[in-house]
Amino acid sequence: MTARVPTASALAELVRLPAALTVVGDTLAGHAAGRGPVAARHLLLPAASACLHLAGMALNDWADRDLDAVERPERPIPSGRVTPAAALTTGAALTAAGVAAAGLATGRRGVAVASGIASGVWAYDTVLKHHAVLGPAAMAACRGLDVLLGATTGSLHAAAPAAAGLAAHTAAVTALSRGEVRGTTPAVAASVAGVTVAGALVPVAVARRSTLPATAAAALAYAATCLPGQLRAAAAPTASAARHATRSGLHAMIPLQATWAARSGRPVTALVLGGVAAAGSALRRRARTRGHRQVSIT
Image 1 (tube, rainbow, N blue to C red):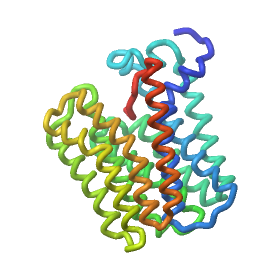
Image 2: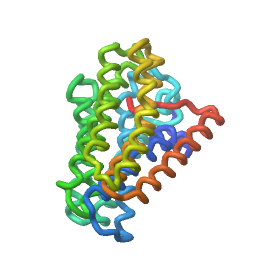
Image 3: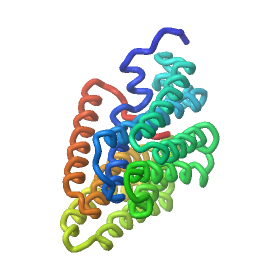
């Protein structure tokens, strides 16, 4: 493996750059649910969230470089396009940038929550990933904290239901992603589908009358994005079906974020997240046109 500087395209693939769009909405949903004030510096919260997510992707490949050399040799590190040292440096730099951005946005509260996310990311990638229970739990905790990061502008308590909803979805998708190489099981896929149904129904059930139409529309979009793939995986739990359902679950993060933003009475935020979803779809189409592989969270 050469020591040359990795190209921008190789680094973008390493950190799964298009997938960063699935996390910036966490802080937007958290801000909406926490009912905090709006200030220019708060725009740094989505940036902090994205940096921490990208750091996790780089660390994921650094930690799995030996396994990927056997199972996924096309990835940036085993293919020789990015060295392990460069991947680790990228992960560390993005982690520091994420915590710093959160601090600039909301001070000590932001640093505290962002540090919790960073600790969870490093623990998952280096220690907990392959544990059947602790792995999904760690990923779920990171996602919940990411929502609460957006609520550091206001009430963390008020944002707790939204954080729990995103955390539950994340745990389910993480559990399903474990079958991307050797296949999943009908029980796992069916359980994940059940989480999706609950994740769509709960925010609708607790929505106020004034926010019900927008909440229901976003919840329907969420379920439509990921439930069909999960049901197919339950019927035929192959590795291919698990990969497809995992990707669908990742893409469904944004309409789920929009669901909770709408439930909180922030339709503008929900519309912004709809735009983020459209941008992510465009980026994925562009990547496929260029022949890049879609990659997962594992």
